[in-house]
Length: 206
Image 1 (spheres, rainbow, N blue to C red):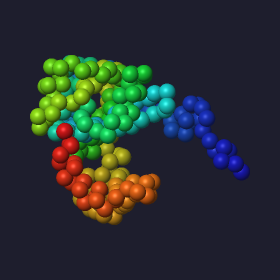
Image 2: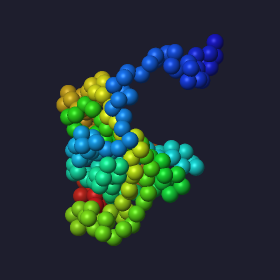
Image 3: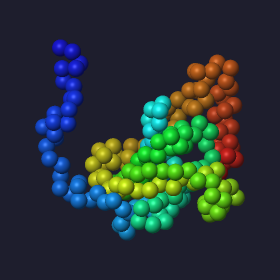
Image 4: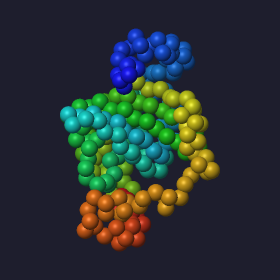
């Protein structure tokens, strides 16, 4: 028996497996940001941005104090693009394909909020200045036009126990960043990197 014998290859097969979607899952999808959904966005200190480009897909985290994603009207949110490692995978994708999906998470809250839409990158000086943190402006700001907005129920976070203190593990239980890089580059000084990372993070976070 090959692995393809049980492969699902059609919408009809999927629908036969899962049945009709729950009515509430359809009702909660809007083509705009309602006041209730706005409350979730403004309480979220963390959002994941999914994008697509010629090289494939990308999924990238963004975080700042709650409220850093700014709702400007019923269909628009602004997201500052803070200092990173300059791979700019998300931005490279957006300039060629504006489709994005956002997933908002709020510590302690089981529901997540999702926005599907299109993004553009702006260097507007006034907008950049309005997102200044610790005296640093973001290099760019993402303007996302929302097309589909809906919240996700608690099941995934409840099953994962993501916010439970009991499920948290020590960082030392996993390979350090220095160790990972050292395995790829023998000349890399893993110990110096790991020992200096806290200072580096504090210096370069904005």
